[in-house]
Image (tube, rainbow, N blue to C red; front, side, top):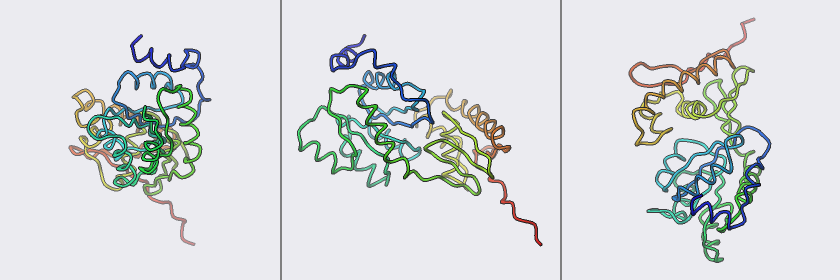
Length: 259
């Protein structure tokens, strides 16, 4: 047991809580912005992968990059970050990115002035450490319920993609994506009708400092994405632009035959 794990248990977290997961539904996409890797790992372990799809950023600039290229249901943001602090990150999420994803601030700062500053920066909730991980989970679920109706469905020609449920719709057929293929599909929908280069897609999913392994696995994930779309919709939708990258190829709209 790490010292950080011990401190979480001292704050009231018991091992019996770990098994208390929400019913299996479409996964919620969470971005955890926390520079303490041990704490982030505890959050990942507690929340698990059945109900949540989790991303982690250890600093504000990495978080802003992820938020500029991907969609999340809830952001969990620590205030005491290296470099740019959580207040400034929250402000930039709202003002620079024009991102309305709900933000939970978590911090040891408990003074009313600190809370007021956090809410004035655009936060939706404020959780003081130490806290039980179950409380954080309940707050995440509550924020998602309040904000999920506001999430727009993305369109690319006659293709529809819901970032909240990861559901793709085409001509009355529907299928649900998951994991990295879902991220890639969202990026391609947002870029439509333009293409995205291999490098742009790899950077967006694995970060600017990805290795050769991640670059090579892009083709595998694109293959998986095409296969899922072909099985679910009868069309692979993703077009390879040889030597350059990938784009979405929306089928032509079916027009009624002339009378």
